[in-house]
Length: 69
Image 1 (tube, one colour):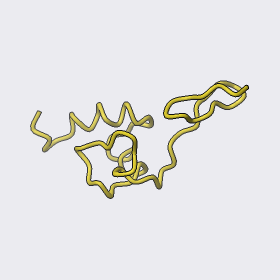
Image 2 (tube, one colour; image 1 turned 60 degrees about the vertical axis):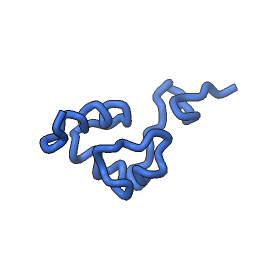
Image 3 (spheres, rainbow, N blue to C red; image 1 turned 45 degrees about the vertical axis):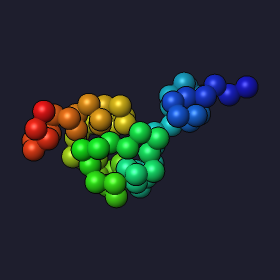
């Protein structure tokens, strides 16, 4: 039986979790990131924050200039 990863994504044979596609839109994510437009893609958010995982993108987005926190 395959082991499920985060957000029901499957792991590769070496145990790594499949990344979310870069053309996925923020509003369609399980937990949209409020610091970005609903139409922002995961690829855009990765470039803007320099992070790969959605969890790290969310953390880095809170530190972006203009966020006010």
